[in-house]
Length: 251
Image (tube, rainbow, N blue to C red; front, top):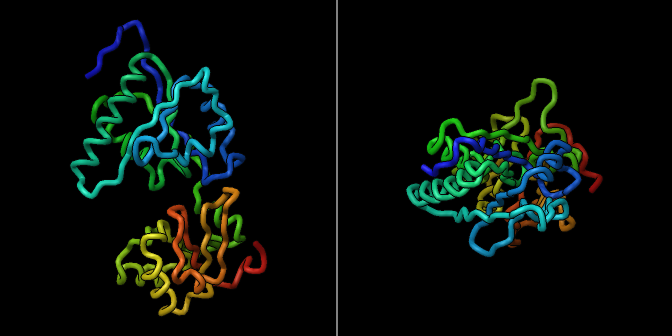
């Protein structure tokens, strides 16, 4: 355990959801805390890679006053390797906090929804149970995509599901059959299987794809049949809503 002088109170880690990509969707609280902390941790897939979360808020940072620390969270197949990575990054964060400095951890979307921040929080609590952590919610890509397409996610007693598109065939099919609205995340890795399944269920005309929601390069595709043979961006999702055709005449 990294020690600290007893006279120095430990800092607080703020997990800040920066939203889906539009800097104007950062909350006022998130912006205030982002500007107040001396250290900002931002996740990257590999050393030297660009941080999507940092790109969203880069215009608000002050490099001369704030230290930006990149933490590598490379995708691994082995759970043990990922756990070591989380613990290593947790130690880096704890070193900052135990020096008495507050810090922000940036995450796209919301910190508690399919976020690296969830795992880093677990690792921090494992190392130091009383570590001070505050979560600042952000607008998820799910909400933002519903807004730009004008597709309601749920109404009255309707049921909605949010799942990774990597769900296997039977589970994907049963989810699509059981819920009124389904949002499929991480579509790029399972696009063809998703398209096959929604076509078999007669839901192709109820599906809309949104890619890089909120960014200047945002793309909305309402005819998902055209996705065949096309490579999708990692930040892509599909909304499938069974009820009345809503918002399909506008982009």
